[in-house]
Each structure stands twice: as C-alpha cells, then as structure tokens.
Image (cartoon, rainbow, N blue to C red; front, side, top):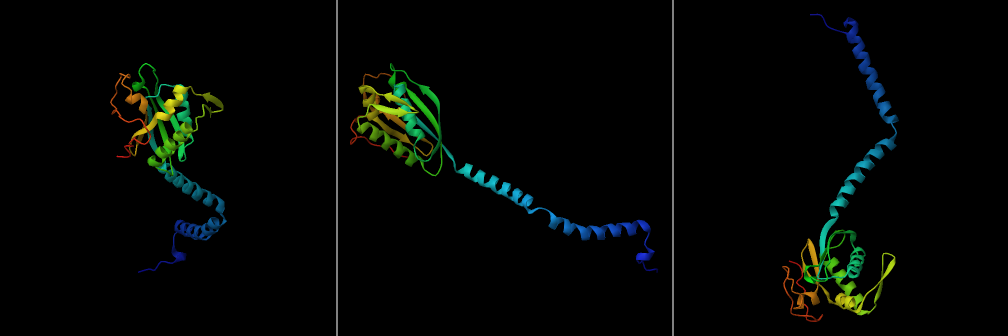
Length: 207
C-alpha cells in the first residue's frame, strides 16, 4: 500500500493546506490588533442595559386617591405635596371629579412611580406635610411658581384631610369633615367616620 505525503498530494489539496496554515498564523495577529475599545464598548452597552433594566424593575407604581375635597386649589396643593414627597419619581393625575354639590362623590386619582421607599413611608410623608401646613395657619402657598390663597373653608378642609385606607398598591386620603357631615347626602362606598379630632382619628393602616 502506497503512503501519502505532501509531494504525492493533488494540487487542490495542497492549496487547502496552505490556506489553513496561513489562516492559523494570521488570525491570532488580527485578533490582537483589534481595538479593545470596541470590545469594551460592547461590554459596557450590555452591562448598562442590564443595569438599567434592574433599576427600572425597582420602580413601583402606586395609586393615590383624594376623596371628598371639592376645591381645585386644594387639589393643586395636594398634587404639589405628592410630587415633592421623597422617593416619588413621577406623579400623574388620571381622574378628576370635583362637584361642590356632591362632595362625597368628588375624587382625584394619581398614578405615582416611586423607588427606594415604601407606600407606608409615602403615606406618612404626605400626612405629616399636610398636618404641618394645616397647623401653621398659612393661607397662601406657592405651587408651580404661583401663589394659591385658601379661604377659611378651604383651610378647614386642609385640616380635615386624613389617611383612610392603604395597601401596598394604593393609598386613599379623605376629607373627614365631608364624610361625617350628615348634610352631604351623596354616599359612595366609603365607610363613615364618627370622629373629627386628630386624637380620635383611627388610621386603618395597611392590609
């Protein structure tokens, strides 16, 4: 049986072997000459993309409702309080109904995006800010670059706003004066309160 060697190989096969040898020699040199910045940029984009997704996943959505308030000015003040609450990234109003003739039907709803905080902390921050504003008896507040002056009735309503019902996905504030006043005949599906003073009010807290 005849043994094969390089001299006995056909011409096409010799070309294939030469191509393989040249490729094996040149490829490592080409890879080493490739700019590392391109590779680093690709890795950076991949890393930043995954990091961005993780950060986005940390952002959560919360619904905040204000019920029983008939004043547009108070709604604007409440909106400013929400927007400046620590941890709130974005606050958007998506439902507004204000009718002085039916205060119990009045409702404003916000969809709030937040991170690095909790719904309980947001509720507490809003509540404490409103309480401080109500206690200083200041009638004029700066909101979005312009001043809002409240009437005595509106200031009394500000003093009466309390947390009502809270979960990990929603927070509800109500005007307790509206929901304890028997003259307000319109009755939505909210439980009535028999207390009016700060010391008597019972916060339902989180479910």
